[in-house]
Length: 187
Image (cartoon, rainbow, N blue to C red; front, side, top):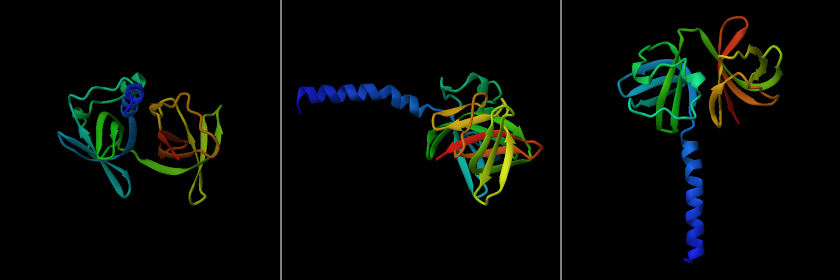
């Protein structure tokens, strides 16, 4: 292997190192009723047919990318004990290696979920209309307390503006108007 190839490879590894570490530290979120909490794990029913298990690591460092606004309304994972409540679980990692960094208790609910396509967004009233796979349309209010999860991580919903055709999943209150607590984009 030539010296130039070796130096080029080393430069590529060094250049991608921080970006890879940053991508791995992105905080994402799921929401659902908490099924179980142990000293080392928290289990959440993400969908009606699936439960996600997250590691609790009391000494885990809070990622810098995690918004201070979102942190302010959270509980540390090791102190959260409300089995049965709906919770917003913030985590890092992928697959079977996901670690909780914070939990926001949403209360007992009721909360509903929808997965569908954005058909309209009124930026003045902050209302989004979604059509699910059965063709049913639902209008929901996007308030400032809403949490949004994208491929880049989580943030507050203050500046979020979905576009017609976007694929989203939302957890929302059963009240009128339906108010979104959590919104995630998917492709």
